[in-house]
Image 1 (cartoon, one colour):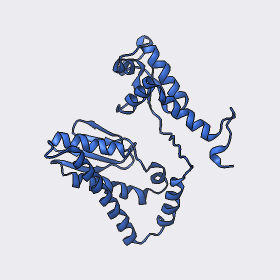
Image 2: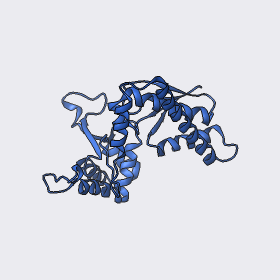
Image 3: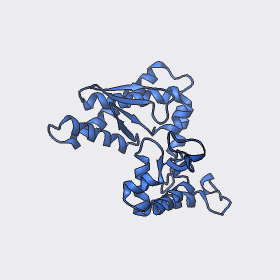
Image 4: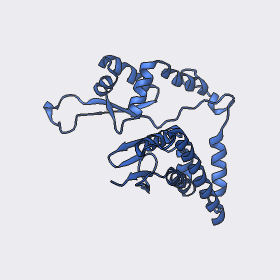
Length: 241
């Protein structure tokens, strides 16, 4: 019996749990709430979520708690900023996307295990030329993604159109870009599980992929910086004014 088939306290197998968690998103209101929370830059309150979707607060609370119960969202209790002391009121329940992964493959595949094995074999003493080829391959893959974005943007796209399509391509790749002011943070690392175990190998590859994407997208004033240790992906996109 595989690990994913082991029963939990309620008798469900790992496969059962994953299917049931994904099935929560079948409801269109719940799915819209999940997407809204994911696309925000911080924790989201029940009131804000309800207002954004135009639904009753009680309905928003019901669906948000369902998502939190199955670990699709995580939550904290916090008073509104600037309000403290006895008259500050009760802390609000705030939600954001959980970092736990949900994945189903039919038939079962385990590409993460393969990636872990390859990274473990390469990481300790990979020759410099091997690491360079690894990074070069990632850079080429990023350029290919940018070529897809340019095709989607159409002929002679405006700078704004090209940026919008470029960010959508990154979103489809799992980077979860979030624009704020003159920068775009990538709030999710698609390679997080392997990167956490082998950062010296995976993080340069990840940066090279995004750099290849930005260079080939060729948007005026768009550049790449790296801030190791931040939540999500350590790569940030910046725009010159």
